[in-house]
Amino acid sequence: MDPILILLILFVAALVLFATEWLPVDVTALGLLSALLLLGLLKPKDAFAGFGSDTVLTLASLFILTRVLLRAGVIEWIGVTLARRSRNATGTLRALLGTVAGVSAFTSNTATTAVFLPVVAGVARRAGLPASRALMPLAFASILGGTVTVIGTSTNLVVSGALASSGQRALGFFELAWVGLPVALVGLAYLFFVAPRLLPARDAQLEESLRAYLADLTIVAGSPLTGQTLRETGLGRDHGLTVVAVRRGELPTQYAPGPDYRVQEGDTLTVEGPTERILAGRSTLGVITKSELQLQQDGGGGGGAVRLVEAVVMPGSPLLGRTLKEARFRERYGASVLALHRRARNVDRLSRLRIQVGDVLMVQGGAERIDSLGEHLVVMGDLTERQRDLKRAPLAMLLFVGAILLGATGVVPLAVAVVAAVALSLMFRLIAPEEAYSSVEWPVIVLVACMLAFGTAFESSGAAKVLTGNLSGLLEPLGPYGLLGALFLVTVLLTQPMSNQAAALVMLPLAIGTAKALGYDPRPFIIGITVAASNSFITPLEPSCMLVYGPGRYSFMDFVRVGSGLTLLTFVVALLIIPRVWPF
Image 1 (cartoon, one colour):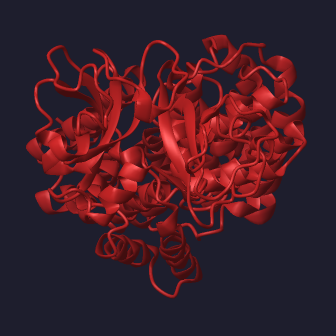
Image 2 (cartoon, rainbow, N blue to C red):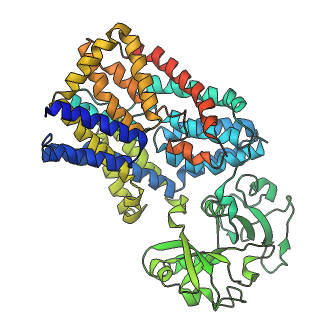
Image 3 (cartoon, rainbow, N blue to C red):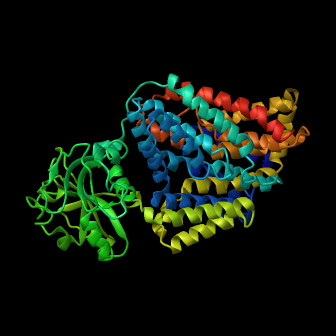
C-alpha cells in the first residue's frame, strides 16, 4: 500500500481517537508512534528524537518550576495579599482576575486556577456575589493569560518546538504578546462586565469545607498579626479561619473572643478551619504550633524527609480518652499533631480535647515515623505536597525569574535556563526529587514527543504535501483573511473535544503547507492556530475549567453560553491584529 495513503489513514484514525478519547490521548499517541515504527514509515532514531527535544525538556522543567513556586507559597501569597489590602470587594475580584491572567502568562494555567480558587471564592463571598459568577471568570482569566508568552501554556511551547521540523523559525518569547495581550485585555473586560450577567447565581461547593480542623497556632516574632485586633487580622474574612479561643501566658483562656480583641506576640490562637486554610495560614501569618517548633528543633523527628498526613484514630487506640499530652503522643510516635478534626463542632482548645474514635489528626513527622504509626492510627491522606514555606519564596522567585529573563533575552536558550533552574532548585532543596518527578504531567510529555515524530513522518513521506495541495485548491477562493479565519475556527472546534496540544499539532502542518501552496507567508497562520488552540472556552473540558466546574455548580450549557461570546471576541481581535503584525 502507498505509504502516503497509510499516513493519511493513521492521521484520520488518530484524529477520531483524540476527539472521542476512547483511549487516553497519550496512549493514542504511543499507538500512533508504534504503528509508524512497525510499518517502517519512520526510523527509530527519528521516532524517538522527540523525547530528547528542547521542547520536551523545557516543558518538563516548567512543570517542576511551577511546583517549586507553589511549594514556596509564592502564587498563593500574591492572591492573599491582594485580597487583604483591598477594601472594595468587587474591585478586588477584578484585580484578582487580572493578577491571575498575569501569573498564568508564566506558569501553568491549571496550577494558577487551583491556587486562586479558594481566594476568589472568599472575595466573592465578601462582595455578596454568588461564587458561580466568579469561578468561571477565574478559569477563563487563566486561559487568557496563557496566550501572552511562549511559556504561557504547554500548547505554545509545543507549537514553537514543532516549527523547526517544518523549516520555520521558533516563536519568540514575547512574540505572541502582540495579539495575546489585546486578546487578554478585551477578554478581561468581557469577564468584568458581560459574563456576570450571563452566569447563574449559585453558591460555591468547595470540597475543602467538608472537613474543618482545630489547631493551636502561636504568634511568633515578626508575625503580621501582632498588635492587631481580630477584625483587623482578617482571619475569618480573608483566611477562612474561626478563632475559637485565645491563650496568653498564665492568664485564663479567652473563649469566643470578640472582633476587637487585640492579639500579641506569644498568644496561642485556637482556630477552626478547612485543611487548605490551616496550611495556608501557617505559611503566611507568622504562626506555628509548639509541637511543630519542637519537631524543627529536633531535626524533623528522624527518618529523613518530613511528611504531613491525615490519620484517623481507630478503635483500640491507646490514645482514646486522653489528651495528646497525657497520651505522650510525641514520645510514643516521634511525630507532632498540628490539628484535629471531629465531626461534632469543637469549642475547646486542641490541647484539652480528649481523643475519640474517628478523630482525624493532622500529623507531621519523619517519613519512617509516619510509615510506622501503627494499626490504631491509620493514614488516610498525604498532605505533604500541599504545605507552603514562605521562607523559601525569595529563592524560588529568584530562580524562576532568573531563568525566564535569561531565556527571554537570549543570553542562553530557554531550555538551558529552565533545566539549570530545576537543578538549582533540587540542590537547594526547594523541592524533593520524588515530588519534582511527580509534578511533571507525563501524558502531555508523551503526547508531544510522539506527535513531533508523527510530524516528521508526515513531512518526509510527502503526505503533508498531498493533503495541503488538495486543501489549497478548496481554500484559495477564501483569500488570506478567509483562510486565516477558517483555520482559526477549525482549530477552535478541534480543541473542544481533544487536547489543545493535539489540536495544534494536527493543524500546524496543514496550515503551513496550505499557506506555502497559495503563496502566503505561513507566520500569520501559525500565530492564528496557536491562539486558537488555547481558546477552550465553549466546553468545560479544559483542565482549568474542570477545576471550577464542580465548586461553581455549573452546567455544560453555562460554558456554552458564556464561552461562545468570549470565543467570538477572541476571533475578531485575532483577525484584526494578526495580519497587521504578521503580514500575509
